[in-house]
Amino acid sequence: MVLAVDMGNTQTALGLFDGEALIHSWRMPTDRTFTKDEINVRLQGYFRMYGRDLSCVDAIAFAGVVPQLTREWEGVAKQLGSAFLAIGRDTAAVTSVKADNPLEVGADRIANAVAAATFYGSPSIVVDFGTATNIDVVDDSGSYIGGAIAPGIRISMDALVARAAQLASVPMEAPGRVIGRNTIEAVQNGIVVGTACMAEGLVHRIKAELGAPDACVIATGGLASIVAQSTDAFDVVDPLLTLRGICEINRRMQQQ
Image 1: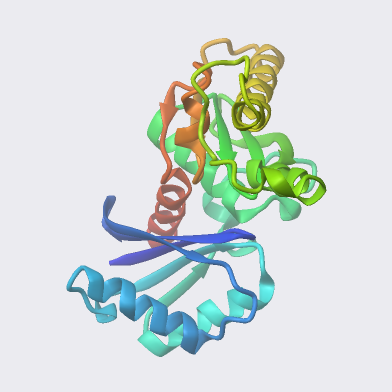
Image 2: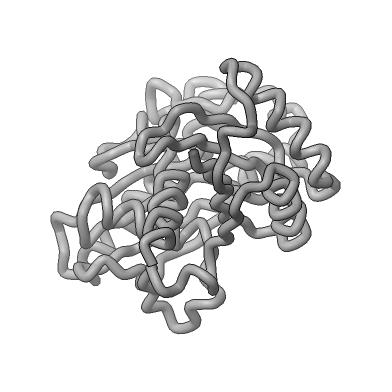
């Protein structure tokens, strides 16, 4: 089995795959102080939740943005006697990136592009709601060509709370109406609906620039299901798209 790891700046998503089938998924905090031993202990706990043992992991396929943690995850793979694959320079042969500087494109964005083209066709547009809100664009040949990066929902909320502490208790959810009749609804509209409107506007302009009005639009990331309640811009909501892309890249590498 393959353990796919999508390590963001705030959270790390994990998916255990048997072929293309996702068996289990988990989320853990991204803590830059974690060592390979601490990661191993956490994994042991997650696997025991479902009556599994880490010995079933034949390979760890990894996409991450924190170099020191990449080394720790590689250390975990060595402890388990598993293969380790980091998405990026070493996987360029099985991915297509047409950005100006392919080496600066995040591994998660490459995985999103591969998954979008593989499972939903191309051209396509991925809107990934994580620490940042990333929009990844795939052209009609299935290649990643660029996109947009904006502050994520939680970053926006944290910035607002930092200047207005009494707003800290506002739940992260879509309100039932656009005109907020109280402070909580007003903040939810500004953060959640505002993010949805930003995505709508960017997707509209990207489709026009691509000349592809029917491009499939996929929402992913931990907050995708919340934002999707406030817009009809998305054709698909697939919270595990990045993990599926990581697994697909690993599969392609095994066929090299």
